[in-house]
Length: 359
Image 1 (cartoon, one colour):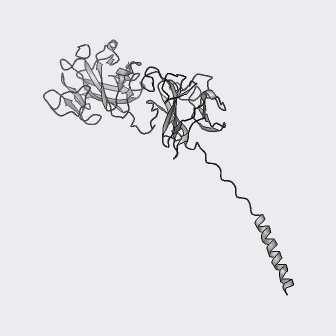
Image 2 (cartoon, rainbow, N blue to C red; image 1 turned 180 degrees about the vertical axis):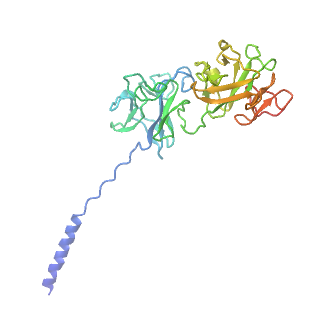
Image 3 (cartoon, rainbow, N blue to C red; image 1 turned 180 degrees about the horizontal axis):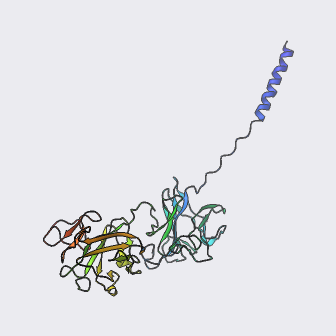
């Protein structure tokens, strides 16, 4: 009896041994990507006007902004940055000891300027939109594996005012930090969120069409004037924009460029343009005068489409203001339009808030 029972037991033991040996081996979990969440977030290929990114106070640099959309800090040491695909060169390598926190930013200067402090990362390269040049920025790991790339910004990219690359003083970045959609930014935001600021919104806020004795310009002359208000959170340089007193000719007068210290409208602030027909007196003097009986004032960025416009006079949005009185928005940037007059509802407020206490 015991002799026959031993055979089934032995068979079961052998079968169990075979089943165990045939189980597949468990795969080794893949190593976590140490650069997960790292993206090129914004770039600027021509930076000449202070203060977009002038760390030494006198010279601007092309720059590349990195953003960490992940939940852990990322060690950037050893990464290669290049404008040539599959191009790895130690000249463009981020030094050790550099990291970017979760949700943080780092601006890489395209410069060899050793005079700047050690807080800046310098790359021995320049960005270019010239024909025949490269169109993208690539970042590779120390092992040569592609980590992130920018959208095309060069001559064949189709962006810019002529379709041949990013314009000077503008940046190209992700519409939402870490997102996939890229757009041109009139106001670059190096080291800051691309989507956190309320864009500058400009409106014609007040005008005086007959100024005999109320206020003078910087030359002591009593000129007609109109005021532009920026209701946004970021400054807007209106150099290159257009103003007109004829809505059929939106490009009648172009505000000069290259004088941003005078033509920039700061956030929640005002700038006065003198309608005196004397543009040679400065960038804030237009080549037309305002009609005391009524006409219109228009503001355009491209000389075609109006950002804002106001018609005054009989049958228009607001009556023509009397001499030394103005017409303006009752609340800065808002509605309705009212008359501002000394000794009446409110005194005219060129260059200051229409919301001032009533006189």
